[in-house]
Length: 132
Image (cartoon, rainbow, N blue to C red; front, top):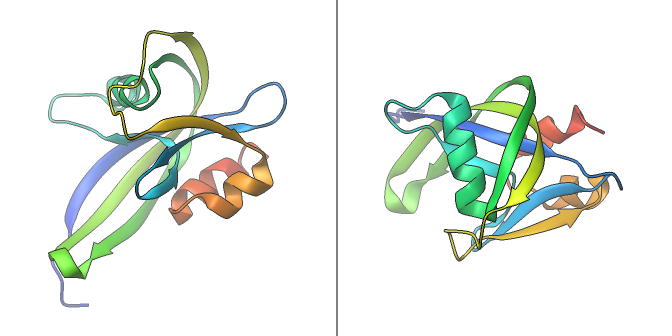
C-alpha cells in the first residue's frame, strides 16, 4: 500500500523432459524458471529466446503459450517495488550453443514435486502446474 510499482513485462519457459522433470535455473537468489525481462523493442518470444540462451546456453523452441500471470516483487531494503507481468510458454530445449552467458546460472532438472517446492516465485509454481 502506498508504493509506486514499476511494471516489468517478462517471458518464461516451462520445459519438461521425457522423464517428466522440469528445467530450472539455480541462481544466487534461488530456483527460477528460465526467462526474464522483455527489453524495449523485443517481442515476448524474442526475449525468451535471448533469456533462455543467456541463462542455460541452449537454444529453445516455443511450442505454445500457456498463459499469463502477474506477481508483485518487493525489496523494501533497496526501495524497489515491481509488478512482474509474466507470459509463460511451453518450450523444448533444442541445441547447446555454449556455456550460459550468465555464469551465476546453472540449468538443472527437477521433478515436479521438487520444482514446485523449490521455485522462489509463486507465479512460476503456478505455471508448472499446467504441465503436471
